[in-house]
Image (cartoon, rainbow, N blue to C red; front, side, top):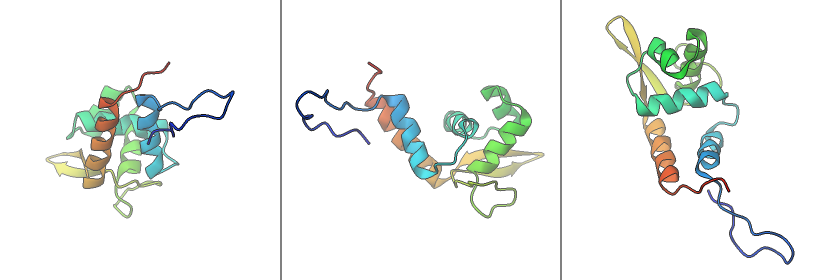
Length: 126
């Protein structure tokens, strides 16, 4: 969501649109305000690389295995085995042979689409 661009009161600067990075973070936070930065980073890597296993996510994002695992569990569906609060419902683990791979849920794909739309309409930091 953009800031209201109606004329500002006399003597005050007008409000401006949020830059793309801030808008993306606000979209993510709107769904779940308790998300850690590592969870946001994990989600963004997953958006670009569906099918990553935890060790691949850790390597790509520069996280420890424990941090990547915790982020993946935070992105999973509430009630899913191993889900970790806030359990955002944005990703799911699917068993592929000996590993579990991460995939976006419909809610995760919807958030990715909103983030993509925000980035396309980018407003830079002034």
